[in-house]
Length: 139
Ligand code: CMP
Image (tube, rainbow, N blue to C red; front, side, top):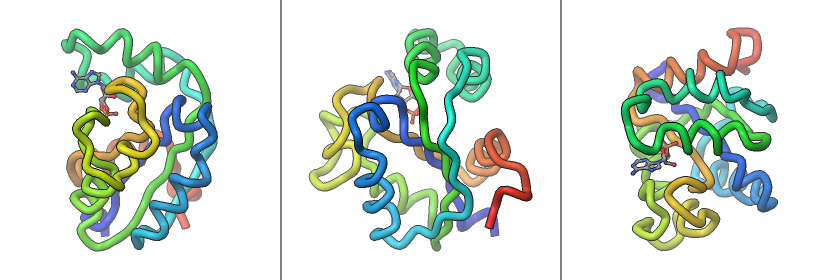
């Protein structure tokens, strides 16, 4: 089952700019089923933990600060080929390079404020989903 799931966050910019509804609509219109959904806010400690894999990167401190700057929406999504199809739906990490019609091309402004996160592997989808959701919160 986990191979058909991915994890996403609508980042603080996507929320602050009023794009929660449009982004969720794009996601469900693309055939993803919502398994879990949560509106929450990360502390800087939690954001640091979530992005620990990037802790050696020069952008880490800015990333942690940005991701804890406002509320986010976290979700587990299900679809055949979920990881790859979701990354296609959201577009390149840098919205300036994102294909036309992708979520980041439509709603993101910069590589930091890039509207959404999408897991890059089945293993990370499992880890990231577990970070936000208990078994009882998945339907
Ligand atoms: P995300 O997919 O959430 O994973 C890590 C985030 O770091 C990425 O999206 C970007 O928003 C942010 N980031 C900032 N600078 C860079 C960079 N140079 N390369 C990759 N990610 C970056």
